[in-house]
Length: 434
Image (cartoon, rainbow, N blue to C red):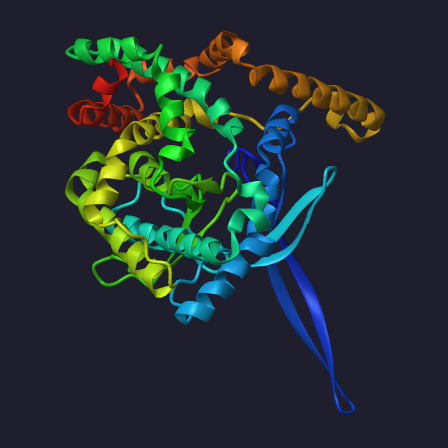
């Protein structure tokens, strides 16, 4: 069976249950055993434009390498040096193929094993967030330590920072910011905040690039997940107690297409600003950050690569230096994932080109779409195309602005307003006007 539209924006997923007979011979006896395999099969997105963007950013190569080579290599490294104390948990890799013309990734279906995501409208609470940062701290620490011995990017060059990713993200930020301004203008009492956002629109791409793209300004770099938010965390819970609460048993991280060698604090910004409530951040953000720092520093030390001059105050200063990036991530993710308008994205094509009798027609149309996608993406990456790309995205995302103004989606409006007010209180929006 295929997954529902919208469950994966960058891929097509098929859930596959396989019944198999395993035969073995013991002496003169033949033993037959029935076994069921529950699999997830992942292909590139069928949409030509999305597929071209994925290839330009090398998303498919990164995820394929992550399952087939990188995580097994990092797990072997940490097991040898730290007795498997910092294992990295992903769904089991079964099969994969990644070439210019063909891509497929087969993994175990961990939903069958009881793993589930927390509904994105709920967001994750303190206990789930604490476990999540435990796991991402392991990823950062193990990859950092591995790099000191084996030079990670020499072995896996596809994870080198690629500013093509931020080039696509910048116009999304601009359009999401325009939506936020429209939203605030529809409410009374936010004139000062609107002024700050409108003033910052012109300087925002420069400030974002200075924080995101200039890797020479970061304290150190390691392998980051890149898309570390609620829907990419799959938790397994124990049986519910009499009070209805379920303790967390384990966690697996999924969707590694945007993984890259980058500043590790960006993963933390992503999680906190996209997947938690204001109340959770207010009450527990400090403990979550301390948990991350403790695990990261303990792991790098046990792995033989302690980081000098990286106490909690220095780590916190780096986190606060990049707060603007976290705010922008949250603003974009909240609008794109909590709006009903975003859920209407339809990956299916009901045209005649899907009919089996029109196979030659379908091939011709697909070739034209692929050629056009290359032209569009090449155009989008030119600095001179910024105005046109922003205008196009503004039109695409305008229904989200209408939804915000209507005010019927309480979760969307509440989470976005909380994020904007929190950023203003911290002085993040003042940075836009400097």
